[in-house]
Length: 337
Ligand SMILES: [Zn+2]
Image (cartoon, rainbow, N blue to C red; front, top):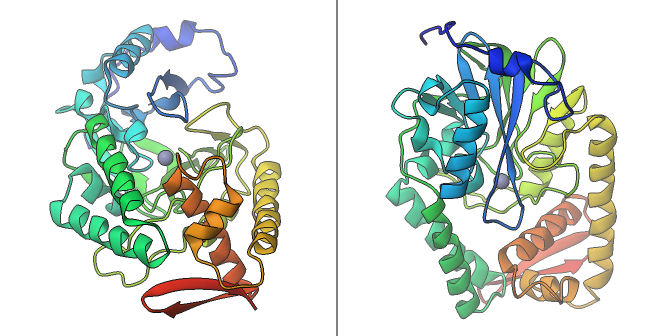
């Protein structure tokens, strides 16, 4: 990639170092979103090239804020050389077309079908979930509603091609000292960047200080046969960040003591799994019915999230040998061992 050294960073140099701008190399730009999660943090990195990590959703408010905040650093959207996308969720990738054609788009191979709206992939995913939710006891009209909500998110993104795939251990030309690590769990496409010298990480939604990230269920990709057990995956990916010194997070404040928070989160999942186990009762139960017992107030409004949360902890209990699943008449049930 072409090296760019000509950008003026007087704007950054003159800015007071605040909590939001911990390093002179990294400048946090917080962008509003229309989603429940609230504003998203994107990061401008001054290296050999000018890099932006994540973009915000495709809304007028997000674009205005992005342009204004970049202008404070004497940067225009067309000055950005590289856009690294941590994962495929709309609040992270939505504004990406504003940086084209100048910027190179960088992400995990599993980001590609989402970013490029690969029709076959999206159709397979959709079909998979219709069958999967039905098998786990979700009524058909609820499945259709989840499908409608999911499709509605598409309006916050644009179909664009991914320029460069990165995976575990890769470095990115123009972004020296930063290494890519794969951090699947919250999303299968999720990557984080780790600074090799000071141990800071830019970690998207992998770890958020004020809320625990949901290990959202996803369909198998391409020739994969099994669905990924996202909570188990997420726990392993969290352990990869135990040694980091500071985490710039996709939402909320930066994380000063990642090890402490990661250990708390890992323990929290085990405790939650025990609570879920107690709620299961003695009879075999389906995931959807258990999610109703666990989340009586929100399962109707947040069906996909509460289902994910329930299934993830059942996967964990199953891995620990505390519950087992079985199939009967095309329906899957769980029971205590
Ligand atoms: Zn996300």
